[in-house]
Amino acid sequence: MGDASRSRAPGAGSTRRRVRSGEDFDIIIGFLGFWALVLLVVTVWMEVTAQPALGWALGLLATLLALYGMIRLRRKLPDRR
Image (spheres, one colour):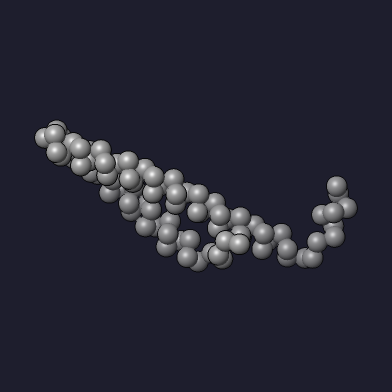
């Protein structure tokens, strides 16, 4: 096992790490997108049923801002293969 890691070209690990990092961002973006959708549904339901929805709406706003920030950061990384 130890000999296989020595046969790689120098710098190959950093490229693989950047690609993996991009995939990690994709996972986080999907996670945030899921919760944004859940919070949207809950917020709309709270509004329709005339219940207080300010907390849900602020949570949705925070999730959407985090999602926007992650998408902007993801654009700087290489595409998935």
